[in-house]
Image 1 (spheres, rainbow, N blue to C red):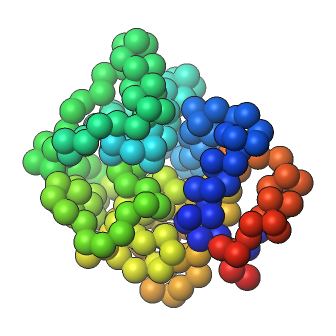
Image 2: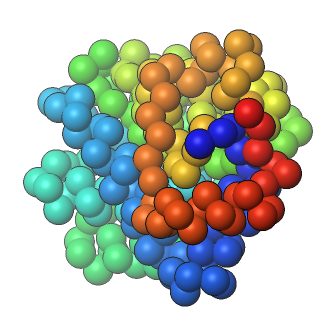
Length: 229
């Protein structure tokens, strides 16, 4: 598909819920499946540290932890709420983990820096901190967490967009995660077409979230003034 602007992606998600009757949790589950597929293809042997934020991007990270566990792959989950309330779907995935006995550690920038600074190149960080809705300049503690990910020796796989990267302009919000791999959903984001975004994206993998392609194409043709060739 063409490059899509972030607001159009959000409208596609909403239309999938309203027109197709697909629950938001199902879309999140499908996104997490896609990210797990990419990560597992690298045959990770070291530690896997999942850094989740309070939004739906963080919910993807929580779902990834459960799906990895379903395949017998252990991960360490760190949730940085930053004083914010989790979205409903992220909260549901947190409860799934709690009920299954998977420990989710409440994190801040200091605790995460301690965890991330001892990682090795054989380890992985799953960046599920911030999604496509980020604008302006990153504030504390997110700025410090992004900086800690960048200073780590581990490889980074970002979920949908590297945290701190504006998905439409490809510019950083002061600072952004420099990912080795970015797993993005539905279509490549508009900002990814700019050369200045490339150092942050790494290898780009597009995965689908269960939307029928015929419906998706027809919907974009009808509403697609947010698409870019």
